[in-house]
Amino acid sequence: MASSKCPSCSNQSFELVELIPSGSSYKMNSIQCSHCGAVAGIVDYTNTEYLINKQSKEINEIHSSLDIINRNLRSIIGLLKK
Image 1 (cartoon, one colour):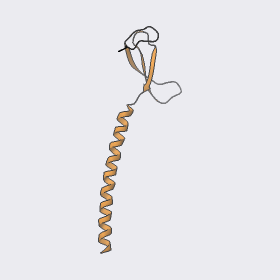
Image 2: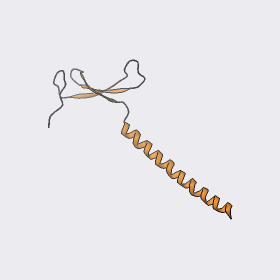
Image 3: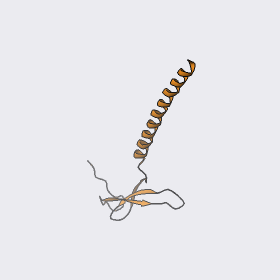
Image 4: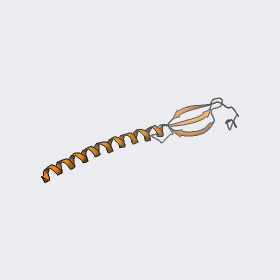
């Protein structure tokens, strides 16, 4: 398997560096060469997979709560029809 190399100095060691681009209110992470600092890529500051999984759990909890409410409302409607 090929190893990643810095596009500038061919070093094979990289680091993740937090940055806020000028004119932006969002943080980003720069993947850069640990030797010369050349940027090899930019990734989101936040872990989007974590956030999506968290939202999915919250949606499932809301869905479960709505199911309970729906069952209770059906019971109430049933009692009112008697």
